[in-house]
Length: 269
Image (cartoon, rainbow, N blue to C red; front, side):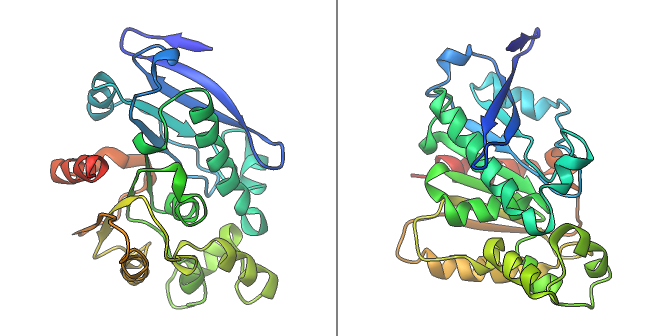
């Protein structure tokens, strides 16, 4: 049901995932729900560490809403929208469920007449990029553009390297690649290891050269492989380097230049 404020409408929806699970979905919009077919849509996803999406309002979000955008928040498994169990059933060997949930959310919105693939963009940061990158590899037709900030994209390579201080702690989220079942599962969804030649959405990546949480090497490996995969297609691919890691709780800390680049990459024919 839509909840109207003096600024925008908030509509709570549900999407049926592949295994029948019901996934919460929050949509912010200014036009009525029935008038969103031609509206550009910006999706948000995270789905890791039992952390739910930050939906705090900001001037930037208001500008997008006033410009006719719809903003969707996909509360997929791996987050905490429905408690600790919601995280547990979206981690380690069940990480794929978050990807399936995310695809279901997008398909539900399009089925309801909210935007369409040619006007749909996705944003994610840090660990949220795992689900975003996996979706791009397996369901690229659902999106027009993707904006990734400080993205974690080489899950397999990072988890196989014991030198980063966080690798051991991350096993509870992604699994232990020393266990064959875990390694095969990580390899099945790892964004960096599933890139194939196909038509991808436009991609803008902001990486941080002094990031102690997400190794820059993984980002560069992803960019190199994606660049090779899209050579036969006209797909814009941009990389912006800055100096620090910002958690998923602060998406709108990006600079005006980054926002401008993101909008340009979205509308690029």
